[in-house]
Image (cartoon, rainbow, N blue to C red; front, top):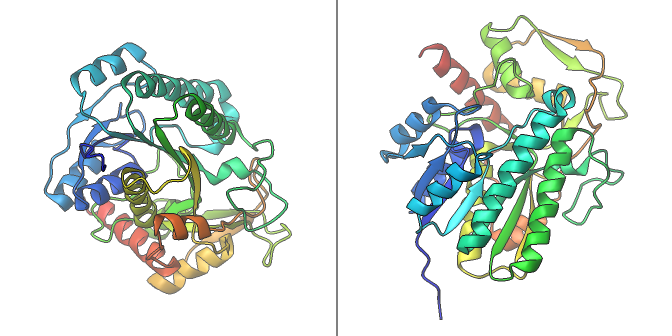
Length: 345
C-alpha cells in the first residue's frame, strides 16, 4: 500500500543561498513549502526573489532554531509537515576557527532541537545539509560516501561530522523515520533568471563571489591563497557544482524517500560534479566565459584549507537519478549575471 504523504515541506534556512534555490525547485515540482529562517544570515530579498520567479508566496517564520520552546510552538501550529530539509547553519570555515563555540552552539543545538520535534511528532522524512568539509584532508581522491572521515580541519567541518553522527544514531532508534545526508561540494553560480544568487555575509569567503565582486569593482584585488600546493598548477583543487544542481538533488532526495526507494533509513550522498577544478583554472574559466579580465595576486596559504577534494558522485546518479546539468562556464556566467543584477538594484 502506498503512503500518501502531504507534500508540505519545512525548509530551515530558506532565505539563504542554497535554501532559496531549493525552494524554487520544490515549487516547480509541486511541493507546498513553509520556511523557518531567523534572518541572522539569510535575506528576505532572496525569498522575494523566489516569489518573483515562481509566482508563489512563502510564509517565513523568524524563529531561532536554538530556541526549543519557539520551535515546539511552531510545530504545534503546523501538524501536517511531512518532510524537513535542514539548511540553517553557520558555514564559514574561517569564522568557525575564530569562534568555535558560536559554531558548536548554533549548528548543533539547533539540530538537536529539530530532531527532538522530528522524533516526537514522527515526521517521516528528513534531509540534512552536510558538507564535503567532513572529508578533511583525504589521502585518496575522488572521495566516495565510504571514505573514512578523518579529524575535521575546522570547527565548521566538525559540526557537520557531529550532525551526521547524531542523525545516524537517531536513525538506529527511529526505524520508521527516513534520513538522507547530502554532502555538498562547492556550490556556485546563480539561478538562470539572475533574480536570486549568493549574498555573502560581509567579505566573501567563497571564491566565486570574491571573483565577481573583484570583476565589478567592489573589491580591488583577488588573492589566490597559495600556489605551492602539490597540485597541477600549485593552487587548491575543489569540486564546484551549480547551485541549481544542488537544489534539484534535495527535491530528488525527498521524492526518493516518499517513493520508498531507499534501502536503509539513513543514507549519504555526495553532491559534486566529479571533476576537480583548481583556483587558477576557475579564474581562467571566469575570464573566458565573461570576457572580463580579473585583477588577482598570489598570496600565502590560508589556515584550514585542504589541498584537494572532489567527489565520486556515482551513488547520487544511480540512486537519486541526479545528473548535474550545468558546467563551469554556466556557473561563472550565471554568477556574473547575478553580480550585475545586484549592482543595478
